[in-house]
Length: 219
Image (cartoon, rainbow, N blue to C red; front, side):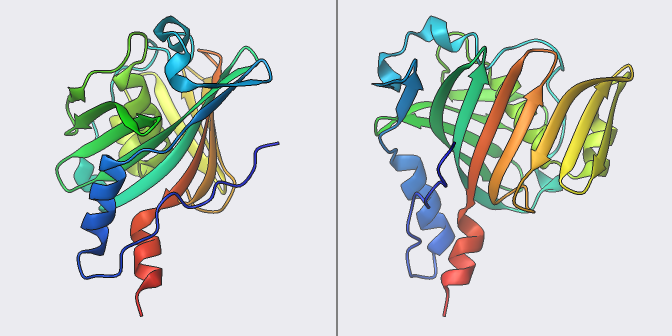
């Protein structure tokens, strides 16, 4: 059973709190360990070929959703990708600004990859390892976090989405393609699980809303 994810960073206590948190999160990673066959091995030791089977490309084309549809925030996440009974874990930062979304993957204190998304296209600022798909990662984040009406308008022909408390479902030609569960009442804080039934993988995000924590910490 997964253990609760502790906060990854302590917010600074000055007027530039959010920007400082963002810079520190981008500059730093933490040691990440990956469970594979019951043995802990570092993410860096995994072959890039093995990564290809986890965050797959294909399926839904890159969604076109403007970052302005979201409130600005910075989210720290532990992402666990499960397929065929195997798991791989890495830490990410998902930063949303008015005109850009930035995703950073970190391992062993170093930036593993990073890319920007402006609502139309992706620019890789540090290229992803072979087999990892920036479009797939971005789509999964948009499917999880986009406001329902915004997501519904962005889906291509044949795709539909429905939502009820704590769950979201995405259909292709009437068949369930992707299901999303929000376990802690908020998509931005706590655990979210996305199951891609078509590509046979599960993405679990344990998220920590840095912006909101910084507000709560203010006197």
